[in-house]
Image (cartoon, rainbow, N blue to C red; front, side, top):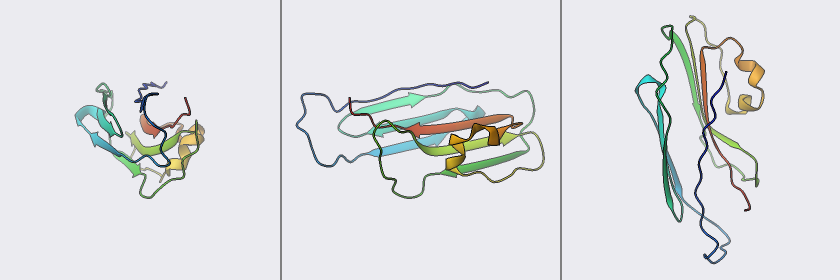
Amino acid sequence: MGCHRGGGISIGKEREPVNQLSGTFNLQLKENHAIDFNINSSGRASFKTDEIILDTETMASAKGFLQEYQEIEIDKEIPVALIVYDSGTVMRSYSLEDYFEPAKFEGMDLVQVVTLMFTGE
């Protein structure tokens, strides 16, 4: 039912440890449900998802994006974007935290989530 694509960037072992890293994350929703995103933090990485062609016409959608600073926990995913599409005429509201309860999306035609995860490797 789902597709998972991953990627990552590293600050590299040769770098001196720092108390605080900073950077930017840019996300762009494209035609046919493709997503482009870029990460720039002591290195750059760009990722693209494939286009998704749905068999039915999308009548309703819900989109949610991370709006405030989030405490980082090592090795824990942080949902930053959630996009839900359905051919029905009614769409319930969703929050980014619903990512951790996938059953809430039962019956939807397409659910896309972009997450960030910081690792200690």
